Length: 277
Image (tube, rainbow, N blue to C red; front, side, top):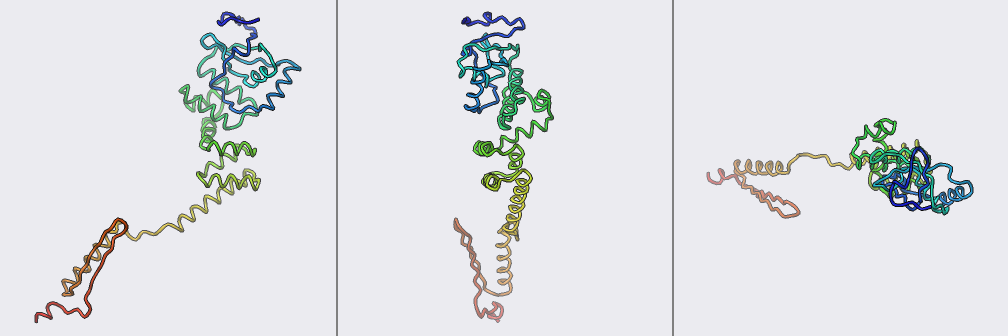
């Protein structure tokens, strides 16, 4: 049986509704971005053999059903050839719908830490809540939310490598102490040597220590803050020689690349007062 395009066609009354799969729109706040096709096939086979044991959750947006929780089940149901899918209707919208979608995925073990962080970020930015409010809604500390969001400082390439190599969230958080080429270099060394978290943290600490040592070793020790002090010193010396009767001269030549200073002191110089005697 097909339903008309109006939410009047669906009678809730505390019951589970059977809604056509093609009429359910995706949730823009869905935190999960990666879906394993192989796992979807396995779930679709299970649905074909045993039916869908857990209904998905939807709400109505402008009279049309929108998914809140159950993206994998909905996709697998389509693969399994289901025309209608059992749905529980939740009368929520906006931030609450986004929150329920996030919580539903957080309660599943296979969501990765970067998807979780992206979901939290979207919840905060799009729906205008603070980290403290997000932490309260998710039942965790504000520091936990802050640590999750820090993971997004890693580049997309670095995230993909971390996930592909099966590294943990603690590996990712340790890498945040580095940036640029140093971080990718450390990540490659961690993978090649198959370092655990403690070994990785030690490696990163050594890299930071060596970098600071190299900077100190290379850093020049400034003798003066302004090169004009050198010129003043030279000019003062030349003036002193002139006052004592030595016909010294100084010439400064300045180009775009350098400043050249010539000081000329005659050999066998005779004092002016001696010459005039």
